[in-house]
Amino acid sequence: MKKNITTLLFLLILVSGGCKISKDAPKITSPLPNHFRDQPGQDTESIADLPWNMFFTDTVLQRLITAAVEKNYDMQIALSNIEAAQLLFIQVRSNYLPQASLQISSNSSRPSDNSLNGLSLNEFLGSSHIEDYTVAVNVSWEADIWGKIRNQQKAALAGYLQTREARKAVQTQIVSSVTKGFYNLMMLDAQLAIARKNVVLNDSTLQIIKLQFNAGQVSSLAVQQAQAQQQSAARLIPQFEQGIHIQENALKILAGELPGPIDRYLTFDQLTLPAKLTSGVPAGIVSRRPDVKSRELALLTAAANIGITKANMYPALRITASGGINSIMASNWFNIPASLFGLVGGSVIQPVFQQKRLRTQYEVAQVEQQRAVAEFRKSVLNAVGETSDALVRIEKLKMQEDIALLRTQNLNLATRNARMLFQNGMANYLEVITAQGNVLESELALTSIKRDRFHAVTDLYTALGGGWK
Image (cartoon, rainbow, N blue to C red; front, side, top):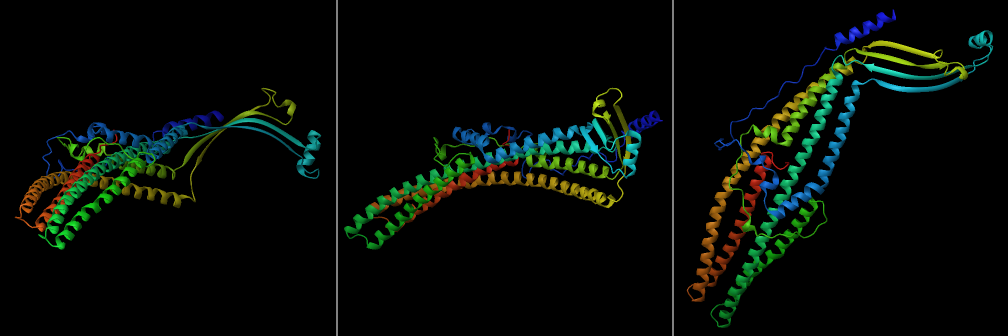
């Protein structure tokens, strides 16, 4: 009889082992264009394939990025999350193994002399108490009939991979933030130099106007307006110095260091951009961008959770076994084989009153999968949009920079001519002051446009999925 029961249990395991109540998740796709907007789409290579230290070549910037990637606290948190997820994944893999426990117990009980047990003890054993000594190993194993453990393993693996993608996303953000901060710092250096140069120029003009005032050629109004123009330029110097100080502190904090100065060797005009900015094809974003890849892994987790919640509604086949040594006398406890005992059992457990709760969990898991699909497709759409935005910004900012450069050159020429004419009495002081003010505004605007263009290139590199290699 025991042999028949055991054989039946193993046959049931073999037959039901191939049962699957949940199918593998279908491959979810998102519609993608053949090329980015206003781009020919001929290049399959992308700048995002380049490691960040090959795309950003300035040595000072490279040192800042390296320090930030190594010491930034957000990066350290991401690495800790990866370690925790890896431990959970390893733990879930052990769910296929039986659960085993070692039990060592010693009990002594004394029933009432007037109870049935007490009377029986006195009659048959001649004792007033019962002793029980046991050393046993208990084993329990649940057959993965419905693929619950398999889906748990899939969910754990997807969670682990998501934490790795999260680390890549953090690094991408760090590289972008440091790079933009560095370019902003270089722009502030250039604007500070422009303000100082303009102050010197206004000082020279002011001295000439004062000489003319002393000679009775101009009124005090001319002196006052020249002083106001010089003070307007001088006011910018502490403003830019403040911006430089704050930007340096921000970059140091990003690098996980205390606030302080940052050494730099090149000027803003010496910084260059890559000659060719290839964007590749939109399909490459799905495999390169960490945030899109993370959403794709979330689909696997959602599909696995559907399988887990559905399996919870079906019967569970469990096999239990225990064996060891047992005796009612301590002196015979380890008397082998007389004290040996063993027990094997099998059970099928079907939830009854929990069906409503389990059904709700299953339906919620289905809704979560629909949300994961929507979030994945949204992330792909946003990635394509961010790339297209960066591409058009780069193109239009280059046009703005070319125009601003021509305007600055014309205004510099106009300023020199105005000063010469003023010194020869052929132009009034207002023309000189106006020309100098226009040059200051134009040069500051030119540096801002150039900074924005550097930022747009950084945004393109990030939008395409670069920065984490």
